[in-house]
Length: 466
Image 1 (spheres, rainbow, N blue to C red):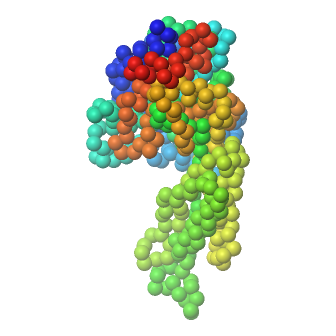
Image 2 (tube, rainbow, N blue to C red):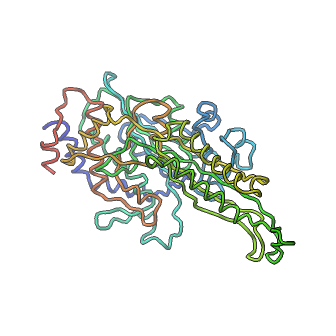
């Protein structure tokens, strides 16, 4: 029997065990900042597979020293620890060290886990990357099932992190376990990474780069869907804009025919309109940026003009706006341009300039769609599915951090619907987990395996037998 067919058969035979593994991992609520419980499961699983383990906590000082353009502050699911530090342009280690959060925003008991399957040394190497941290659940009463119960129902598995992205972690784990269990010798190394703090930071993957882990290609198993993939990881910038006003009783808003009370809320409206105008300009030839103004707060009483108003938002952007630091700079410039225009149009704002502060930024990235790893992915997935997979766009993920720094092709392929990430009743289709495991297993064989292994075409037994 051809090697690839053996490996696919192993996955099919062990389907229930693979899905049970996913349920076990979901039941470990590895919220951002509390990832250890999930990583302990990963350590045991990968250790039992015979992988060489490297377990280490990210060094925040080192990350800022080596990657000042990319390093971010550690974050946590706890609201007061989720991006609490604001800065005018870039975050720095010095600001973190001097802040009240220095002892709370750390990676103590938050280790990365790297599992290595060494090859003979005469083949191409591959990194399989996924993050173990999950976002908070919000109002548990809104969920149909307990968020960490991992209920299996009608072919789907419910639970926080099922889609984003423990499904991907299990698919890549099952893929390599199948290769190992079938006794297939590999020429190149396979490096599996289960990282912490992908959400609102990315420092887990950044720490793997700092540790020296590199390869000829990377597959990040974020949820693209088992029948789709992405060569794009978008960028994002989180920001606050604050406007000041003059607080008076509304009855005294006008004095001697002139406006005396100035509501910061009405002045913020001018700023918002200008920001929307800048967004439209940037998107004139196609959508490259999406401006989200998600939260606004200001004022004290309905009967008084607001002394202050702050809007919090995010600007997501595509690599078409710029890769790496270039895209980040263009978005920041656009935000500042909108504020400048608002000041030019309003006398109060020109005398009381709004304050723009940032809390997080992530660079955009795009892999060459004609690269060899993309071809290998397409062919491998087609062998499993019996049809071509299609490209989609994915928002910010660790593929961008790894690809921008290491300058190696980094693609996104994993089970799950990204629209379900961070949602109430987050879930994943069981068939996608298994399909992705099969496809990733073939990627490992074709990328890292020896040339004598019999490959399977899109019309042969791997798909037709299923």
